[in-house]
Image (cartoon, rainbow, N blue to C red):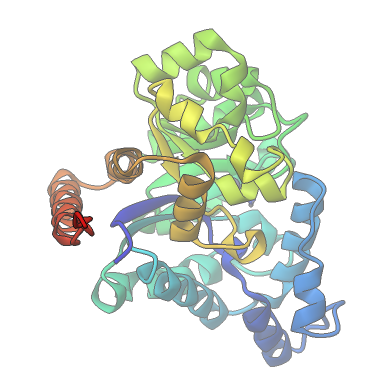
Length: 344
Ligand code: ADE
Ligand code: ZN
């Protein structure tokens, strides 16, 4: 059984597998510029964040109805259950849909229908995080938040994603202030391709509680010291970092250095349909590439629950489940018989 964990950095639109994309394209009469699943999958080779985003936004065109969004989220939850996910905090990008004429209510109600069934169907509790596209204007973000107000009971937090460089957090101070007034919590992508200064801004100006990615914090000792001291979680996405060429190979990934520095790192899948694996695959492949100990792998899982927006009783229940998983795995390995050499 995979280690129980929370997934805190997952774009639901990034879970759109080629097979589902083609099925929805056919159902909705949308023309895709690829001649089948294999050709589409072969296009999943990226030079940087922007080259990925171009395909990610293009493929979203197949998502049109509430049912489409429900099926997308259900497909993710079903896969996540098989990866040991017990709690998922799911990003969505409303502006990528409203710009195509899809109403924000269609998106939120469609996702909401899947999330409402998630605990009973898959044993996964969920939260929804509304992300603003940072390469759109601050006015567009404010209008998006206003349009989401009738659905706030479904939304836990706001986030900030899309093309990072040239779009610093300072651009979104007003919309984050308004989100706080509405009782929403806050996270932001920072330090993925952008500089460490964007991480400082996200903390100081947007008052976020977690940093998504945060890779480039390692370039700034004072920033690392602050993240450690204040126990600000980083939602790290190893496969994404390699596929988008933020890091050369998995063996070069700084996750182990992050843990050694005392950072509250978690492992997540970001856009698993595009980056070659879901969250447990990220965890096990990265652990193997970096030689992470069992202890470090359990620390990552514990961090994921501690960094989540769960209520305290549910968090305590998951942490107890994690401790029981560890005990069971230790007694399993203790009972494996070690061959004893018999003197001749
Ligand atoms: N949107 C989806 N995935 C993203 C990523 N890794 N960075 C920024 N925006 C995104
Ligand atoms: Zn992301």
